[in-house]
Image (tube, rainbow, N blue to C red; front, side, top):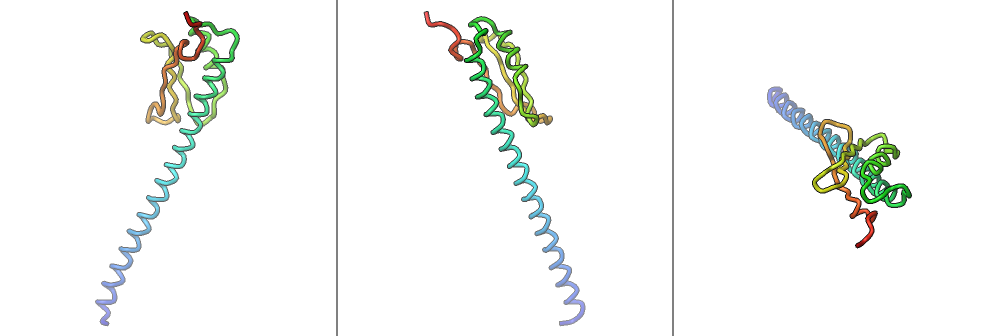
Length: 124
């Protein structure tokens, strides 16, 4: 093999190796982001279930008192990795809860809670 052929082969091999390492690093980075996102989704689901249970067992909550429900949600603890925004909604009458991971991507999950859906209003 001549020197020129050897140098060309080594350049091709080096380029292929660099591309392979770059793809591997991207894959690892994406896998880490996916894992972090899954953890955030689990924390949001846990917070959603805890908040719903807290509203149902709180003795001071009545059917029409959305402000009390909102205050309970605002004052309840939340994991530091997630953010929760609670807004009173008029159409239909209830609370709109938005959860996010604190980044600029916006809401990861949202749900409208109504007093009727929480079982706070007596059946007529």
